[in-house]
Length: 88
Image: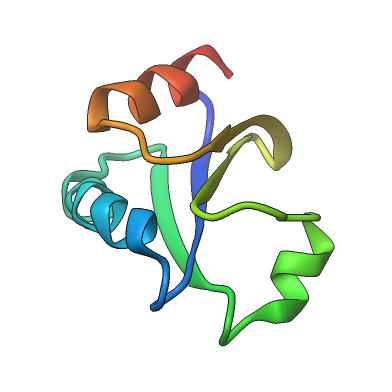
């Protein structure tokens, strides 16, 4: 089994971020063993935004076993995010 983390970068004043927040929160609540979803507000954590060179919002980074495997930019459905994570 692999440990997967979705690290989602959003901001309060970002319209598309508001659209994807419901999806991300649903994923947080339904995450099973081997899954973790973390939502990062870039205004509160500019250091993480810089560390991962996030230029557009929303951006979701997919990590598998500690390594960055995929970057998803823009609003995506639950299914699209899960597919990105599964194939990473």
